[in-house]
Image 1 (cartoon, helix red, strand yellow):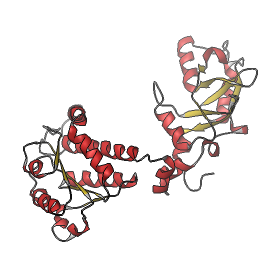
Image 2: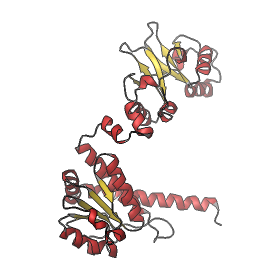
Image 3: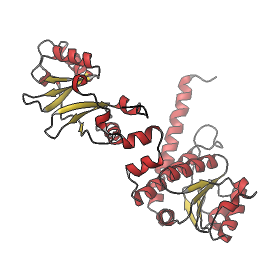
Length: 330
């Protein structure tokens, strides 16, 4: 067996090649066929029928599921099952998207004329613009040439990654064009984390009243640490004499000051705290809170301060509470 150091080199090479493959989609996005596919998906009166063989078939299944979960009627049609009767689920109002790196998959090549005979437009996503499938389709989107990553170049890797990303782009464009709201998304996901995050409000989860860590800005840091330990959130809000939020003090702030000064004995909270903390309103959706924490610049955070109309802290919502959210949460 090869040493771990060699295997990490393989992992880095695969990552680099797949990122390169995804980067090659930039000119594809700017091409007329990509835009036309968007128009056809948005204007489709039936279902988006997604097909692929082998690993591309697994990707096609996932893309169809993503379309469905965001309000675009879609179905994965297995090419083998299609020629044994399942072609009957396809109607003239549908749109077909075929995924094939080579564009020479016999199962798909045989189906393309049948779809066209039924009046169903065929979109071919290929890595070879001169392939049979690209020529036979109504519209071809060429993402190639693509080189598979890894020591075994016959194992699909870069191609399936590129297909998946391309599908995600069309899914996002479709639900954005339709104006899908968070409330409508929650209707499509009545169970599970997505549904509950999309319908629950921050005020239902936040730590409030006695659970809310809060210290005055003039307090010695040692006393502020006691508040943080007792409230067990890894942070405390910091307020001025009027009770308005002026900052937060976190475990990280304390570690940094100890590293820099070696002692916190003579320091006050306002000398160490983080100013301009991220805040959120109590009536905001939990999904909005999660997004704010995950996309925070310069890096993700794990808590937001909930403030009232006068900028006074009334609660703290923690990422862990949001991710544990479920039907029994209160």
